[in-house]
Amino acid sequence: MSTLERLIESTRELLWERGYVGTSPKAIQQRSGVGQGSMYHHFGGKSDLALAAIGRSAEEMRAEAEARFAAPGTAVERITAYLRRERDVLRGCPIGRLTQDPDVMADPALRRPVEETFAWLHGRLAGVLAEGRDRGEFDAGLDPLATASAVVAVLQGGYVLARAAGSAEPFAQAVDGVLGLLAARIRT
Image (cartoon, rainbow, N blue to C red; front, side, top):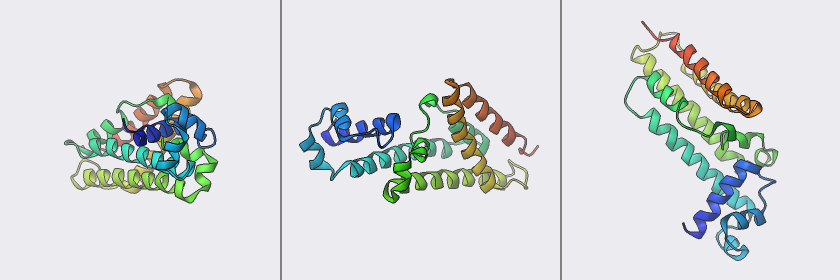
């Protein structure tokens, strides 16, 4: 892994574990094994490195979601595959956790990839739901935008409940619940 990659990956992990304030340049250097000179050769400062790391996390999250949303199958099958994909539930969502970091939310540049990622996820889910409704998989009364909002809210809330309980079970129950609500809208 190149120096640049080690810096970005180390910062991603530290942001996920500690948040922005807890991710000091010294911690990044220690985790990555990269010296201060090399770090500042690649990045102007901590915020530039954090932006690259957040951008990378956002890209990865979108790619993982898109792999499920673009797969063959019904809308419910694709959404189920996305919601049930393997994830480290107790660590939380690497993007969702950033919304609770006041330093990230106060900085428009750092907040932008977080906002864009959730907007993309909402829009992509709404698109899959609309496709399913238009193909007759769901009843005609399904509101794709509102339903996509509910799915994203349940997913992020499931992470919070799991972390609070110290168990992945609340996350699994939240996913089961939202899938049950979607199943109730399937046209028979």
